[in-house]
Length: 598
Image 1 (tube, rainbow, N blue to C red):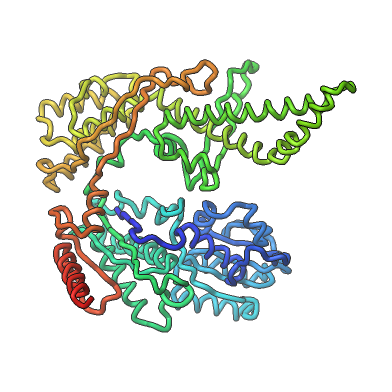
Image 2: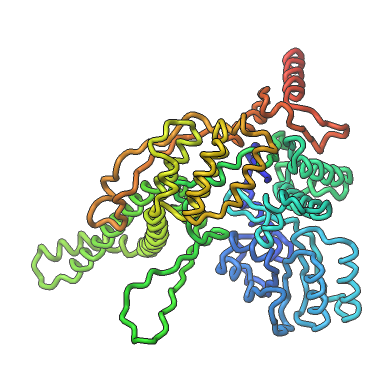
């Protein structure tokens, strides 16, 4: 429902800013100095599920330990008293959390309490904590109470999500439920606005907001504009002045926040993908930058009547520190498989070199050839040994991506995902189809029922004309026979009729993928990835609806698609509901007057 694009280049990425804010919080809200020689103050970190989700993609256990965190525990778990240690709390200001924190004060669990709230805490809840501290005679132990404004989850340098816990309550489905009440809708809007407000406080910049009219995106924009204005009005207590901004407070660049409704492009989220990161997200259990895999157990002879062995689960973190992931996450999958194989060959060559040098160092005898060879290779071996930690890390990453890519490849082969991807690309780009849609749906070996339904929905959404009732009934029968649930189709049919989209479906450009035949290097017998039967599809850039909208708004181009978008500038005192054409005209006039003055 919400699309966010940072148009202004920030001095530091949002990931860096949120990490700095978290480290500052863990350092008792004092700026953390990297090269501090003193021992850190040992402390306990108490978080709820929301706090855990915010911290886990940004700080490893080792980094927490370096910050002096000896234990990190969930707020609502059973915790023993540790009376000589300070506790740093990082929680949402909910009723349940406040009650549990008050209980901790009464039970005298820790030496001192640093209470940090993910979002701003209300005055009434703050009074509840104060009353509990008075009743427990623990006022002096409550060292600090802070609103951190960190209610969003940063997954990459410039990508974040609004929430993870209870995400179904803030979703496309939640907003578009026919039975949603006004109160529930207000709650959803307030949740989204709070997260976006926290994001811009952490970024230290006030955005210019653009949004489509008559949608939930407009409701969010109006509420966010109001919240930002109210904060800016109080100059002394504004969150956008002082050291929040740092050097950025004098910058003339400002971010553009574009809020769009998911309905402008329902086909793209359904589209099967072909890039590494998107495939991992689509087919594996990928959650907050961590992928969970089940180890494939070999066939073992177990005694009759014995319980089958449990499959071991392995977790891998795919983080910005992982150079292979950073380089290849946007690459087509066959390229990734080839790159993993190349990395493996490179590692084996380095490993063989170390072994060769070791055998030379162990040469016996006193002949001059052996001694000269020994002296020549001493420096090489020393260099090889010093690079051993780097070599081991390289091996760990190769093993990680071999396992992840193998799991993805199994899904591609089992479900023929390359066929789905290529066919959907052709549908969305309006090119000639080389195979009947009915044949793919009816093929029992091609994909799961969900894959078939996703394919048909993309066809239905992208079609210039809806299929006739006779054709639709034929498709429905094929989908039902394939085990598909027809409820999504019914919803899309109603939505299309309601939105009158049948005559003007979203345009995705005229480009499509090209099949380059089978891979050469990856097809080698010694390869980990046998790609037989899988097409090597080369991606072509597509101009998706959201990309076009952003381009029009950034360049202030006049376009029927965006001319009616509302404009909000929270820094302006007067009302500023203007459209793209007016904004562009005003910018041109100001540019002319400036040139005249020069």
